[in-house]
Length: 433
Image 1 (cartoon, rainbow, N blue to C red):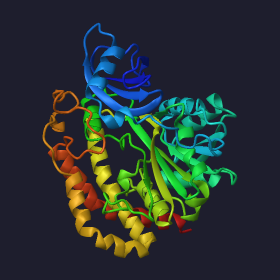
Image 2 (tube, helix red, strand yellow):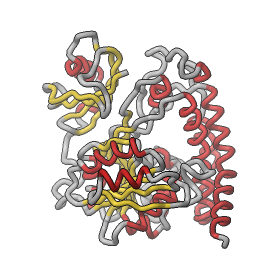
Image 3 (cartoon, rainbow, N blue to C red):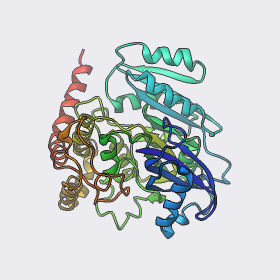
Image 4 (spheres, rainbow, N blue to C red):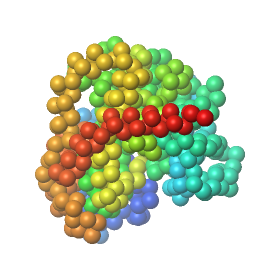
C-alpha cells in the first residue's frame, strides 16, 4: 500500500502537491493508497482509496478526500498556527536516543537539520552502545551540527534523562523523538511555538503517521489506530479535567507518544525527568513517556496536542515485531502506573477512585476485534483483505485487533508491575560499589 502526502489549496481547491511519504516510490503508484491530506500545508485528515492504474494519483486522492470529508476536516486549517504572531518559537533542543541503528539515525538526523525552527540544537544520546557506529556517524557526517553524548546504562528513560541533563540552561524547550522517524520541516516550530504563548504549558505532543505500509504487519498496526491521536488540537488542563475522560490524567496514552513530545525544560527538571526504571531497554518494556505526561499534569502544568507537529514513523515490519509491541504496550501501561504510585504516592486516592472504570477501559482497549488475518499466518502468510485490515480512524475503538494480540497485551499488563520492580532492583544493583 502506497503512502502519500497530498496538499490542497482548500477543501475544493486545486492540488498544490502530491508526494510520496519519506522513503516511498515516486511518483505515487497505482493501487491501494493511504494519504495524509493537508490544506495549505496543515494536516487535516487522511484518506484511503484505490488509485486506478495509469490514473493521476493526486486527482484520485483529492477526489476521494472531497467525497468523504466531514465539515470538521474541511475547516480544520482555518486560523493561525499555534504561536504565530508571538515573536517566534522559543530556543529548543531535540534529543534523539538511539542504540545500534546508525542507518536509521542518519535519515532522522537529516530531517531534523532541515527544520525551519530559527534556534535549536540536536543531541544524540548513544544508549549502551556495543559498537562505535553511532559515534562514528555523528563525527563523520554531522560534525559541528549534532552533539553527541554516551549513556552506558541501558533504558530509554535513562537516555532521555542524560539528554535532559546535557541541555543548556538557556534552552527553554526540550523535544524528544526517535531514530525511526522523519520529521516534517515544520515539526519543531509547531511543537515548540505554543510554549511562547502559554506560560502554564508544560508539555506538547504531535501527530505521528506511518511512513510506509508495505507489509501486513505494518498495515495491522496502523489499522489498530497507529500512534496518531487525530487531527483536532486539544488542551489538557489539570485545573479543568476533561469531561469526556473520566480517568484523567491516568489515560496518558491518549495524550501522545514519546516519538513526538516536548517539555518546558525547567518543568521537566522540576518533576525529576523520566523514571529510569521505565522505557524500552528495561524490564518494564515501556511507559517512560506516559510517566512524563502524568508527572507534568500532576505538577499543575497543561499539556497540548497539536497535529501541526508531524513526524513520519517507520513502523516495524514483521509479525513478531507486532507481537512484541502488543506485549510492550500492556507492560508499559501498568509499569508506568506502578511508577506513578511508587514515586508519587499522593496520587493513590485519585487512582483508586478511578480503578473500576480503569479496569473496564483496560478490557476495552485490549479486546479482540475480529476482521483481520491471523498473525499466526506468519510473514509469508496472506495479507488481510483490504476491507478487513486497513488504516483506521485514529482514536477509534472499533479497529480490528486479533485475539492473539489481545491476549499478549493483557499478559503484558499483568507483567508490567513485576517488570518495573525488576528494573528498580537492577538500578539498585548498579548503584552498589
